[in-house]
Image (cartoon, rainbow, N blue to C red; front, side, top):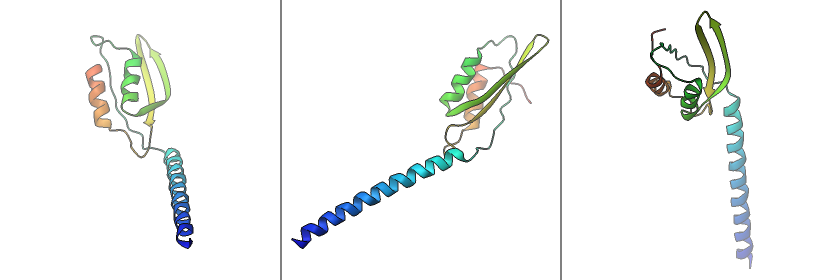
Length: 113
């Protein structure tokens, strides 16, 4: 009979340890969300010959695990300048900026900044 009781205790310990690991995982996820990501700059300029919609740029960013945290624009003469502040959805994963730039280059005519 004592052996049966020790098995229950072992099962209880496993359950407690599983809950502790899940709790720690949740805490690490919350901490990772609070740590700011290093901003990356990708400068792209479109010419008149290559037309695109702003939502297409945002779609690429979202597909690459980025989220737009701020968006602004200004009009100067006949030109519109958009500024997007973007951060990684998860600071642990980050954003592969070279891949983002490659995908946006396909969408937009790129110039040097």
